[in-house]
Image: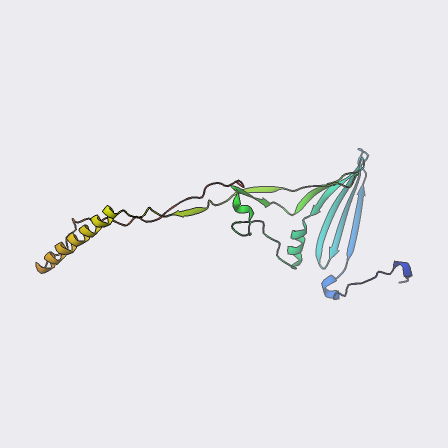
Length: 193
């Protein structure tokens, strides 16, 4: 194979990557010309054993198409796990609303206007967030309630001692007031909800 090296075309820096990771690099492009005066180009890439596709449509000075989401590409390549939208801190994360948005699919629609403004659209699925619960402690007992409980305990102990002397089971008709337990209620909605 003959090739020509132009000094102006030489890159300033090059990547040193092992051949077995890159494998064969291929790029195929297909052009279509529909009757609405637009141009459609579909590019297929193959790098490191992974296939990628990109669609581009040019019409009336607009460029738009479909492409794979970057985090999906990273997950396929095994470089790193994509950040899960719902795995943030409890206070700062997006779970602070009634619903969360989960991305659906691995493609997104993009559009570029003449002035360079970019616009993207992706499909999401709403997921209801679990309701956060907060602990509500009961009010502290009053002096009368404490005294009533002490008297009920003393009366039960006397009755149990009397039953033990007579070799009978302890009485079950004495009721001792129970200490109120904390309850759990739904956290009030914030401005994020």
